[in-house]
Length: 313
Image 1 (cartoon, rainbow, N blue to C red):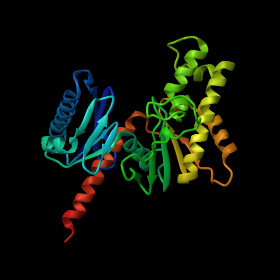
Image 2 (image 1 turned 180 degrees about the vertical axis):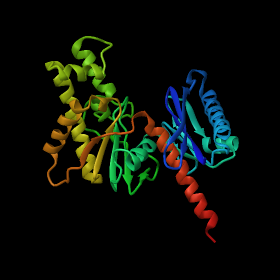
Image 3 (image 1 turned 90 degrees about the horizontal axis):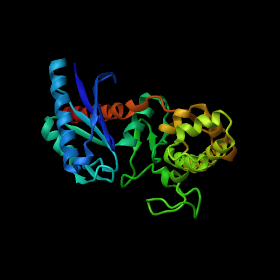
């Protein structure tokens, strides 16, 4: 069976899959990145993991993988195949595409983790059929993927979609990016966790605990939650004013609160729009498989491009 290797590299763990042409996950595996051993060890771990997947696929399906797709965090130069920078993994200017291709002997596509997950959500997940979508995972931070006609826009320098650094509260909390008042300082899962821990006096309380308290009617939790909703709605209206998406897909840890998040968020966005068209605001559908599925799509897209090039006179 023809298949590709898909790797989704995170700050602490890696998810991997062998993916068929129809998107079926034929095999899945996980392991730690080993970042405590340093950036060189992380890269070697990725190469070894990919090689093991290649060997498994060849043995199981009777032929080697046709290509590989890899999604990584941080700053990514997808055109050059370089993982430019990751604070969590400690690497700089790693020619990951070239090293993986040499190790596996197949073409390799490299992508940014959020944009890659957004590609999967837009093409085969919650945004399927939408010609324009915006995917926003609410996790430790907030990023975004701008979907246009089945692809994700990276921007001129690879920074497109960084909605978490839209300033929604001028002069507000300082952000590690150097600005103050950034959206992710108010509406990320990490920000809600921090605010709720302070409000309830439990340093171990997190955003999931806050959502449960909201559902039970706790007034302090409702205040913390609404503050985050209002900041998020302000950022989203800025984004939809600029991008005019047909579908707005919200994922990440905070989206696991379900309608505790989506009902007030839809209301808050609706109250803020004037001339703008209100997009559908929907939860992400693919969960933690989005990165692997997106990496698989990158690999199949690369093969499609290669096949066309080979047959073009």
